Image (cartoon, rainbow, N blue to C red; front, side):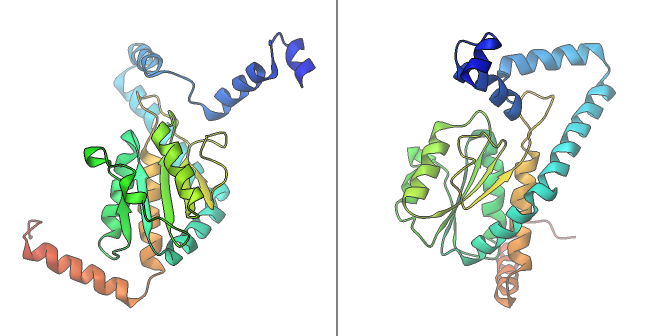
Length: 236
């Protein structure tokens, strides 16, 4: 492979491999480059054309996320979540909404979920008691936050089962997990798409409700009663 790389005018195998990894991950553009490309495309076409491009990209992302490649991983994740003593959930920066949604939905029917928020600089504090009976659900897409990588490594060292949702098989968090779900993030917009991550969060919550017993329905009824007491939503 080294001789082959040099035949193609690469100085070493690492440089040769990085080209393939950038292509495979599809995330080698800076935010500035993505914004410049977006402006260029917008100038070359009308708004309808850009909307169509975004729609087609997101449709493709969701088709692949819920396609055959992830079918087994979804089933395995469901089983692991059902058996978890405590479920820790996190997503940094643009992926925080996906993590927050999963925690928000689960709070309606279970009390064993913890969202790692990082409020007051305490991001890692909630992980002090994570152990072998627990699960860490991690959302991590390119560009990969260093704190996300270290959090997953810590969970593994403590023996927790890691369910990682990431964007590429060469992601730094893609291997060594109990379950890895790959979700493409193709988008002509400034940021890579977060829609697949949100869709997976919704699906996890739905799977947990579907496989739960009567006690979960009772918990949902209890949550609705609490919301009505505080007049959280406008009644019809």
